[in-house]
Image 1 (cartoon, rainbow, N blue to C red):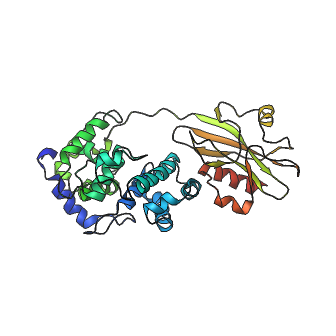
Image 2: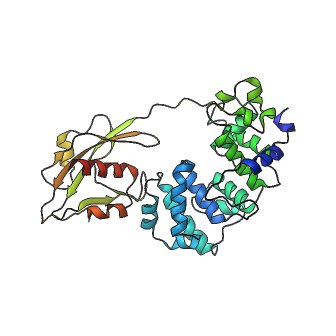
Image 3: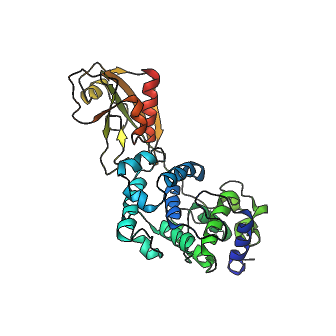
Length: 353
C-alpha cells in the first residue's frame, strides 16, 4: 500500500500511545504542553542528542523554571550553564529570545508559526515544533529523524541535503489536523528508536506496510547523502599563564564568530598547516616570560574542522598586569563559560603542571 493511501497518522498515533518516550520536557498524556519547556528543549536538541541535552534541560528548568526567570539572568550566567553543550550561538539566541518573550509578549510565547518566527533565534523547524507540540497547530515538523522516515516511506532516492525541500513537501502531505503535536513527537520517536539510520527495525514499524523503501529492499540505504569532504585540521598554541597567587589568565572571545562570547585560555590564531614555529608563538604570547611547552597535544573536533593545540606554560611576575584578559583562581574555573575545547586545555595543563 502506498503512503498516500495508508492511514499513516492513525497508525502512528496508536503506536505512539503505547510506545512514547518518557522525556523530561514532554508533558504527560492528556496534559497541555508548556511552551517554555518545549521551546527550550528544541533549542537544546539542535545539533545535540537527547542523552546529552537532558541533564542541561533539567539544570536550566530547575534554575530558571519560567521564561521570565531565564530572561532576568545575565548572558554570562546562561553561557556558564550552557558550557559543554556546544554551538554557543544557540545560548546567545536563547537568551535574546527569552528576553523578547518576557519583554514584548508578557512572558507568553506566540501560538502561531509566523509569530514564533519573529522571535530571535527561532527558525522554521523550531517554529513548527513549538506551534505543533505546545499549541497543537497542524504544523509540519521535519528534523533528521523525520527526513529519514519520509525518505524511506516514499523511497526517495535523491541525496541529502538538496532533497530536503522535497522531503518537507512529502511530510506535509502526511501531517494530520488531529493531534498534530503528538504526531510530530511520534515521528521523532519512530525515527529515533525504530526507523534508525542503520539496521532499521522494520518488523516493529507501524508504517511497514506502506514503506516503499522496505518493499524495494533499500530501507537501510536511504536517505542517500552526498559524501562529505574531509575536515581540515587547524593548529595553534594555548598559553597557560599563572600569577604568583596561582590564578590563571583567561580572556573573552569576541561576541561574533566561533565560540562567540565564551571564555578561553589565550592562544595563537588557529590556522591550517604545520604548528606555529617557536619564534611565532613566543612573539604572540600574552606576556614576556619563560614559556615552557608541555608534552602532548589537545585535540578537539568542531563541525567543520579538527583542532590541535599545543600548550605552553609560564609564571607572570608580580608587577605584570593583564592588558587583555583577567585572572581567575583555579578553584573558580568552574564558574567560567569555558567551551569544551578550553576545558580540555585546562585539564591538560593541570595534569602536567
